[in-house]
Length: 344
Image 1 (cartoon, rainbow, N blue to C red):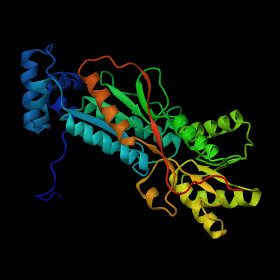
Image 2 (image 1 turned 180 degrees about the vertical axis):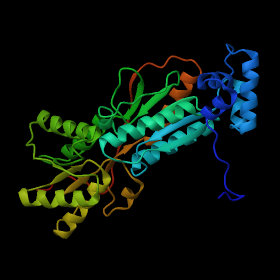
Image 3 (image 1 turned 180 degrees about the horizontal axis):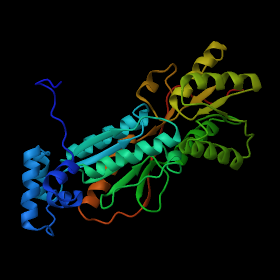
């Protein structure tokens, strides 16, 4: 049963094609004002669009400017700080450039389900009125997921490793880890203990590899890291384990939430931060400035990654060549009150 105030159902490109008796490609050519369509066919498609109410405002705009003025965004999950901030950057830059955003969230699941969901989302966008596609997906899923991008539609991957066939954008994880570890070593700490991120995360792996390489470079002991799952609870458990192993003076946590859990563990053990133990996080979530003590952390410019993705996709839409490979977005160390010089 449909109520009078229900939103109108979206009409698909396929429905227009069936009504006009043409292929989906022909409908797309008409909507994009591509010239190699017979005039009678063009009129039939336009009539079908009007009859079905196929996004007439978008179609009219497409006829005027040769593009829909819309960018599709596929995001694996909205449950992470990075994805939320990246989307904020995408939306802000798209609005500034007079583009609309069509967002599809793919629920987190096992790798087989993820592959099907991502492929389905990309296929759906290929049939909708979008000029380009941005995919925000955990980098470790790239190797497990066969991302079948629609032919002829520009696409960008955000927060992922390099792919030989298209451009991608990621924060400079290695630079950020280097800033964190060097800060603690410069304060005189004999070594740095590490709460790592999940083993399947490429971002976590880059941070851990850089931490390990720096300790080796400086000839320091490399304590065995503990892998968490990005939650404060896992950071708490890791810190408790560290305290049971030996004399800890400095901890680098792979994200701010795990650093928060570590702060609690040290507080419960009666070990003051930063007087006895210095702690550095990663991400610079808004709340990190309000931890006690306020957290020294690595700031990631997620919004910049989102705006860069939009700028690159619009360059491609407008016919400019955009080479494949990773564009690195820099990081910055934010020093607060959770770190101090080594005092023992």
